[in-house]
Image (cartoon, rainbow, N blue to C red; front, side, top):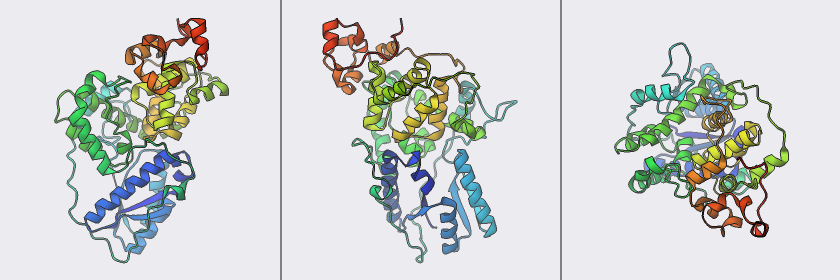
Length: 412
């Protein structure tokens, strides 16, 4: 068995090669190598074109077959097709396994369609199908002696940019530790407080799922052993839902899933202010600053800032999705693009015209302003709910704040 990972040069040179994700990936590879060493093997590392690198390694090893995890993006599918053509030419068997999701895309098909377009019917079908027992790991693997493992590169070998200081540790070991601690200490608050921005009882497992450090089937199996976590299972289902949509419609990476006929505003100054977290709306600015500082954003904050960009400012969802992918550690293509389209009204939301009022969202999910105070220091001295509407302060007090006026008039 030759456990191998090819660092894709095309992804490293694009948005996927931003420092937060690269640093997490490299630490995950080092952790995987340590686990393989414990089983008397090594992780074989190559860099360049994935199809070429795998074929060269297969020839070097005299391999009978190549096994890989199948992904759903158009780029990943084309990469697999090129590898398949090469394997067929060399008479090497190739098998692609579905394991990125719990229920494989295409397994659940609605009557009269090729994929589910609405979440609730998918959720109802998914609950009955989402029973996957994780396999036990092998105790020992044997790497052919003639195969040189290669070195896992340093981050500085791939980029000159620096990741955020609060980057989570990458790898299966860290992911399992985080899952265990969350189940023991915080999961009991999830059902009622999942959207509480100040407390943030979310699991923070998304980067580990995205990079394959944790099996989503194993996460679900452990979650289902505890009561009161159906809302968390529902989030795992949302992840599968977006993957099955992208498997059917790979073009949703750039194209509207639902034709809305909407004309987006080209306002580069407003877009830049949104990116910096200087919109004049504290709850929006707190979210954007957390994204820049931590490379992470809880789901409720993602919804708020995305709705503000697309529905309040009228700016194209693609600009927001691109910015998220430049900073998020867990920038899963299917989830990120699917969620942005959902919020923008071009995706799978059955109420495409819904708008999240940022003031109401702030009052509901950050009622005491603790989330804003932590991330927007210019407003930290304000007490109570007034922090969410600083434009209502007395003129003298408002003038003392080094904080911008709202980009657009506040909703009535």
